[in-house]
Length: 439
Image (cartoon, rainbow, N blue to C red; front, top):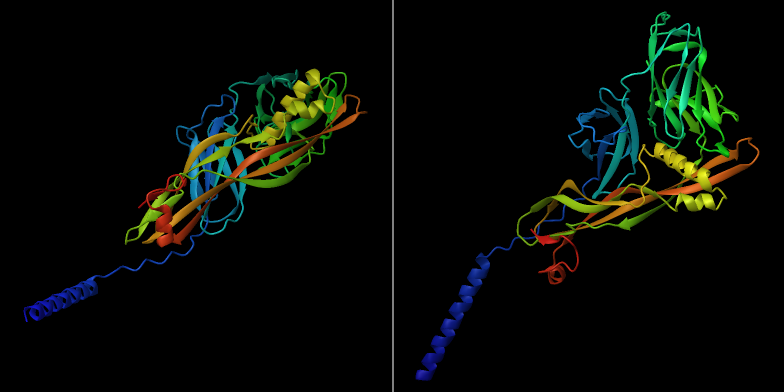
């Protein structure tokens, strides 16, 4: 009898516990995971550094305009245009008092959603010289322009008629100035410069034309196909005036009749080579949201390479063509200058630079999801063909060399549902995914 009563009480207690557990479970609400957001449109960012071409010092206070956008370089000479919405070509115009204006064009390829492309550029601006050459119209004179291995001269013959920008004849002594410049245009149709020269004041005209001579840096060879161009409407315009060669003085010779920015350019075929990519380190490559509410993350830090390099030492390229000694040394310097002028006036490096960068790009991470971020950087090749001959023009040689350029960085954002498999894989550690963490 006592046993039956004990059993009845035990069954009653168990039923009560089961009922309590059922009611408790019924009152507990489990939040469903928030759906993964739709892909975010690609963004495009431009970062730049501006330097004084004469001193290599950073230039603060440079006005930087790109279409309707405008900014100013900071004390470190830096500027940026963040999170642009469209791909394609962008032209950046740099101006500052005391310096020649500079224009640079870049072009973004179209990126897929959830990608952020970052282009980093470097520009140099040429300062005006504080003084120049005074010319007496009846006497004329010669202006000497020092340029290292390539000095230049500009000769004003006696009794040359000079007119100012209004067309009025100048009858008193006047001052003319000249500076060595850098190429103010880029692009596949732009001729790489043998030398860029800026003549002031703008708008001056001369009759007869003035004789311009540029020293050949080589002793046994000269460049083929040198042409004269002047800068007009943000582009180089080829002149019909020929550029000849004086064997006795080892000079390139031409004529100019008005003041502007001039370039003795080389007809150098430039070809686009292959494009390859390398993985880069993304420090925040994994973000896990184990919470029950939406989270966001904005700053994505990554490591990238910068600059461009030759695919092989120039010494090797020239030695294989039998060009050695003093001419090899001079030609290496000239080739570097030519390539520099064809690449936004930035010099080639011995090896790529390595630096960290950050892009601000807010990403939403829903509840119980995780976001992986992969990064890669593109590298492109350019091939150049420079033709030289002996001084008499009877023995021609072609020099073909290649540069490799560190290019656009791509970040790929991939959201995934944080299921049991992900929990087991990522809980407590990242398995080598640098910068991962829980939000």
